[in-house]
Image (tube, rainbow, N blue to C red):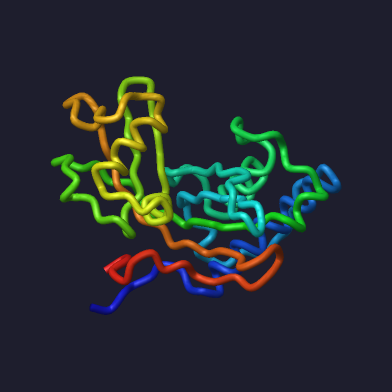
Length: 206
């Protein structure tokens, strides 16, 4: 079946280049770049995450974003990139000298949809990311996490519960809300290097 993508490869490459550019400017000159000419689609509200990884180890260095379409994509992208570098509470802020040893990855998200029937069978590894909300608790894992960790859907649900600060299996509680979303992912192959679309599963966006 033909796979339909919302964003072109050129738009994804633009997103990653822009993320690196705004972080570089923010860390080195303490200012946010203005006046960037964005593609038309970036004027529409959309969710986005920016992920920073150490190179060549691939170890996570920062990841922050907006799962809901609350900002125009152009604004959400800039915010997520800067926040991933400076506001991720799991890591100290990135310093300018690190940028030559960090790769940038941008995930352009679909709107999350609540699952009516929360079962592992209704989650497809390689396509779905997960959000779990329970009371004041909330956790999110991008679709690439399940693939990189080589886990099944039940374990993916459990890890999302843990990301929210809850016990594994919390998704079975009738008061828990589980949402799925998809992501078009673009990643540098090395710091400042070529940018490619990441294929997690051949059935993405069918």
